[in-house]
Image (cartoon, rainbow, N blue to C red; front, side, top):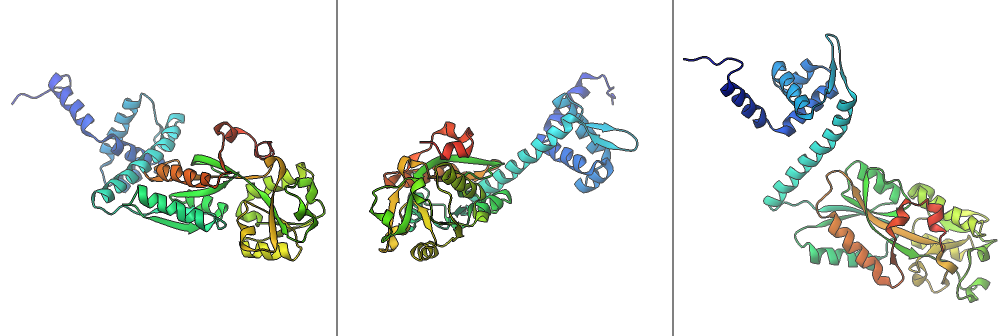
Length: 338
């Protein structure tokens, strides 16, 4: 039998075909193992492959990318600058691929998982019902698992991938998250019906001077909390005290007992005839909400849900689609804009 040499073209073609046959994603998994272990022997044991084979795959990957990924000596293995970049990108790419395979498999077997969505505790019941009805109409094969959560809780669970999406109030820390279209809703003030201010058709923030403010706890949505107080001060209202309440019924009780006024879209006042709701002049206070989801490997249905939520939120006749360019502005500029 004729033996092939290292320069035999047929041997070269064979090696090239074999190299191409190795799944590029598998090479990335090998790379991640070495990058995390910083030791070829331990990485090979972890992957259950021979160390020479692992070293060969890493060399091939470096040739494919045209970059050295590791600085290797007889005593240590360190990532190069290119290797550190590839490690971050590889983890994201592999997570997306793994999630894609899982979702495709479930869809093929008719086992598509329900979409896990967080919503704020004070979301109106009619809005919630409209959202669910619209999504069921558009995506009848997919269920929605709704969870009543504050903005801070949603952000944490989104980061941990325990939620697929969250209806967040902004501003919020959305690092690593993608935002759908945002909707702005002007806020008004809730006050006792027997208050002298109740005779006014609308109120400027400065006219609330001398009153306390009933507001949700800061831990629920730190960004919104700080922005609200900043805007109040900027427009002449510095509350004599800030009293915290999460439940709408508790808010009503505090307002009726004279603890302070509250900001709302008008829903709370509809539950109690002894309070009134008055719009705030200039629309200087408003709530911004949008569906938000992880940037990496998102659930395939989240974008459609985001569109449906915008449609539902805008049916109240006063909410408007937030200008996209506003997202880059500091919130104290945005929320105080007339």
